[in-house]
Image 1: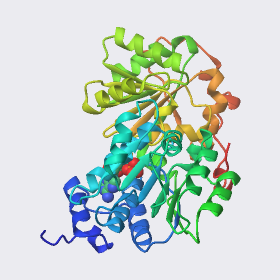
Image 2: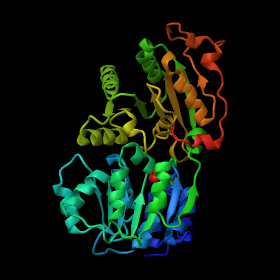
Image 3: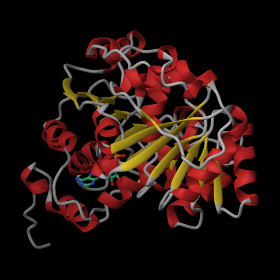
Image 4: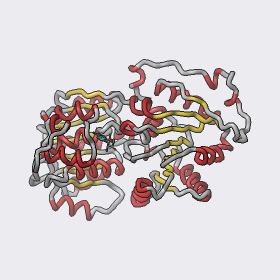
Length: 406
Ligand code: AMP
């Protein structure tokens, strides 16, 4: 192989890995990659507070592949992810970046049969990307041993806490060798996670990439006040008047998502739907259809909000305001990824005013309220610009309180 001279080899990565990165079209490392790659290569533990969308996956995948080198007799790297979608995405990244090596990656998640996964494990893999529940099932059935794990990645740990996975995560960690290298990523550090980090990590190096920067800096936000009975009409108006390449519409409930999807289909839009009542096959189909451009609209609940890497999403529309401000940041993180700009529209009814204001506090910005001049609005107190209770600007909050959990 001809020597590769790139910003990635200068960070210490082997040519065969840097080449895959170049072929993917990345010339420069993102800030988290520039920070994390040398530390991971040095074998140290890491606790990182970076969001997805910052290039986090490559920040751990590239130096891990370098350290693993060539194929071994048993799994040597384990990556735990909170959702099947994230697990699939991270597996894809490992496969891509390892294309000039002989390392094998497999993915393990629930909701599908065991046969194929067991077969992959029997065939021998170097890297396992897994969700905790199914991995434990395989461990209990004796299909997998973690005794040879050299590098463990706990990704999106705060999401794993939200989903009730921490006990499973602890059981899994305790089955890996103490001598392992551990990389730990979480956007927030509430006490449960801090104590897990203390237990799982050995003198970790801290990496911090401001988690609000991506959304706040690269996405244009707008709130559209509207009465509840006109929400769908306003959505239609937004879709009609906006030049969008692809748009994700977020709903609060699964039923709500289905309802909106049906109405959009009736209005001749091509639509994919993704929420937790849909089968794994349906979810993958919706996601793939959206990524390939077959569906111009993806309707989703918050299950899709975290982590999913969907290229070129020009717009996010929050049909329902998310109940907590952090989810807003994750939702809009689907657009404006890796320095692209995007737009995020949020429909706000009178019932949502408090949640909308807490979003403004969380992102530390006042979001512009917008109205369509020709839309036949039903009057609501929302439109009274002199009503300070509804429209007052948020008070800036300090960084310390912003990091706290809801
Ligand atoms: P992640 O935070 O891992 O979900 O990555 C977010 C997006 O950034 C993905 O689409 C990556 O393919 C992309 N990406 C990762 N590293 C780079 C890089 N060095 N330059 C440009 N884009 C990148």
